[in-house]
Image 1 (tube, rainbow over the protein chains, first blue to last red):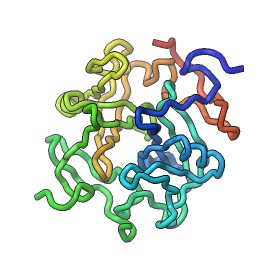
Image 2 (cartoon, each protein chain N blue to C red):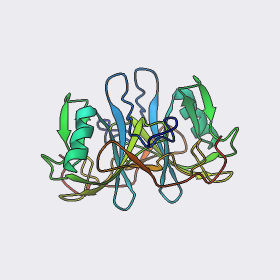
Image 3 (cartoon, chains in turn yellow, purple):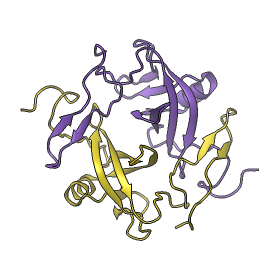
Length: 131
Length: 131
């Protein structure tokens, strides 16, 4: 039985934002944060139904089955939701070369903000040809 | 010298959304994802200036120095930004009892979405009194 408020219920009630998206943080099997992207209701449904992670591409305004062109298909290992059910956490196994970023890095988070708060230090170089 | 597009520049150009927020994924020193929250420009500036993570609380519409009431102060170890500079990744050392979630769990991601796509399984019980 599903009981309690949004933070204790065992009913999945994903909360989409004003434009119909929910934020998804995607981590590799080893827990490393790879990327953050949005899912609409259809992308979330397809992710759960197929076990392959789908997003909504804001820039292209289209459903986005990650890996269709790059081979970096994300097989869903586990999906979690946060306390107020407005953020998802997907743990995935990545196909192809194992990367997730269009720049050719494994993770999208390859730059550290320096102490000056104004400049970035690149800490990961591309492993693959940018896509 | 800062050169290139948003994904290769070494200039920090955080991109805030239409309501002035940027998403921040916060992970513990061991890499575990603790929480996701928004920062406005002031919260980001204070985070960088003080080394203590600040957010913008949407529910309270106020600047939020995490830990002020709970003791779960987040000392910034490293801040990264993603390829298109619209998401931050903060690695932190957590004070107090080491938790981050208002429900008393260490992480906000304590529920797994079941295969049916409709129910949640609680995989972490509260370690502390909810706040």
